[in-house]
Image (tube, rainbow, N blue to C red; front, top):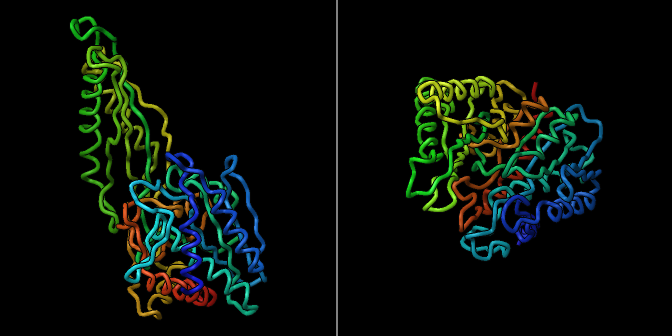
Length: 381
């Protein structure tokens, strides 16, 4: 087993399930492992808590090179269920199986190898930072905290399972709740109450009528149209009680250039129209509890051109692509002002599944591509 594969196996064996998910201890053990490995390489390492017991990590090899490249990867994973032996890495058929093997620990293992190369080679072409962020799987508070530090780097490669295809644009996300309030009554005499679930049906219809025509007219050359969905509905206490409360959780995917205030104003207009039609309707929108901006990096940015060159030199597909899901690049680009490319080994189709795996050949290739980006970025103009 190569040192790279052994390191990935170590990472997979660490339980780093997000602390907001069932059975999740959080990122501390993962951060500690990466910090110890980076210090052993000779890197300057900083751990700082974003929340109690939930740190971000920064490891740096600084020699005063003209350019500094940051590699960033989140430290958390989704839950272990329903994957059997999720923390027992298994190699079979050229693949390593285990929770986080593709999302995102393959990227993290490869990035650690690049940090090791930078530490061992006094002539390494760029200064290298490795950042590990907490809470990517839920609200991306870790990458937001990292971005708010305005790290003194020139660009960032964000590790996600992209099959080593460069992602230069992705959607953002806005999430909020809508609540309806009714009047409780016995189900035998429903006329004495007001059914909050029925009222939510009215509210959802109004939202669809107010939002969806605009989505059909919106489009992005790489990402297509914006989207929205209702993912959770909660209401009622018992089948024989007319419910007096109901809530839904809404998910709106944002295109580059879309602003949250404009999106929410459209929501509010739809709900106002529902109230106009039914004066007794009591419906309220809460403030968003998740806002992740969209990301788009210009093809002429040096980091994009360096990535294309490194992939081309490695004989891999360098076609610039876009994805619908959001990543830590959102915060680093919009808040931190960093040109970003999302790139890593593994297939997003394996993320969060009950048989998550990564191709070991692609994991090995990722190290070469990441090193190639460092070389090309040093010379890019």
